[in-house]
Length: 149
Image: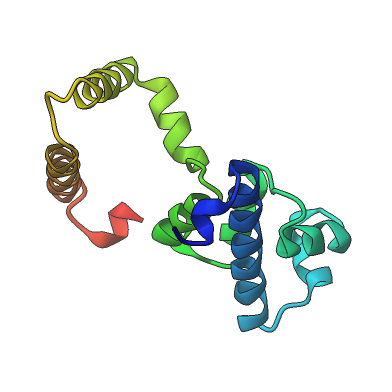
């Protein structure tokens, strides 16, 4: 049994916040930015930003989005930042909220996985296929990279 297996769920969340905060600090220091400068851009106090970087506070979804913009993380970087806090990016949740058919499809998929009718590997295969279909569609509808930005 590893030391991580001995931690409570609250301790695991705290550890995750500490690691995510360290990551945010590295993003800031790699860009030679001060907490005061970043906090000013975000409209928060540098003390609050310090608490986030220490893992003592958890940023709101909006603040995570704003941090991704300040650090110019791009789409994949923003998704990674949200995942570090076990959260779904704002743009993803907004899109899902707007699409009842997608919500139903994901609910059905989850039900099938829980019932053992679809394996995790098959679910992953489906997501890879959905991603491919999406990229093909976007390439067809928006033929240039400039249009996709």
